[in-house]
Length: 230
Image 1 (cartoon, one colour):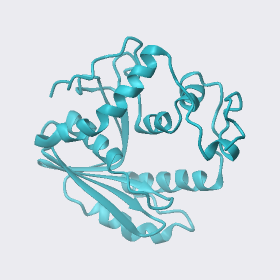
Image 2 (image 1 turned 90 degrees about the vertical axis):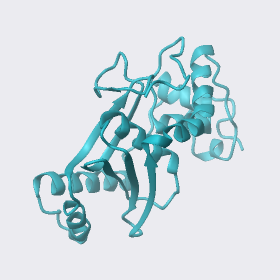
Image 3 (image 1 turned 90 degrees about the horizontal axis):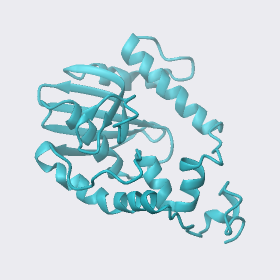
């Protein structure tokens, strides 16, 4: 599948869905943290540490057969369900695509355009199942799932349909969407308007702030004129 008209910006950039979300929240904050790297977010919180531990535990259980550590044994039924899925099973699959939507290596820093990771991926003939483990509260976000599906379609040309799921482990809930190779344009039509805004900002260097409720207590970008206000 060729590109859908997004082109390559004058100033080359790569992106992830989290960076796009950061940009849409506040372009000034995005530039300070993700582009200029003048500020660094603190990811040392207890909830984030727990999330990393859970991801590692599932990875080692599925790939290596290593038992869950003490306190996580209740995840075993979920792991058994994953191990019973037919087909080739993979964990922590790093998937990268170029701007023309063709596949490339994760560490292709020259041509790599978008990157996504499948915590769990099973491929059986023309069908794939991709799962993203979540340890926080349930937040519906099908766009991120659809972009993961796009990476799978690019890297596995035999796959015609992808079922992508969030597993909300805290609430024992599942959010799922099914994507079809014949409907790939549906995903990009939804993403392109915001992605073009991101590309234009990189081309022009214009990253205006978006003042809001987060400015008063939660934003770490202290040189923003709106910091501490709102």
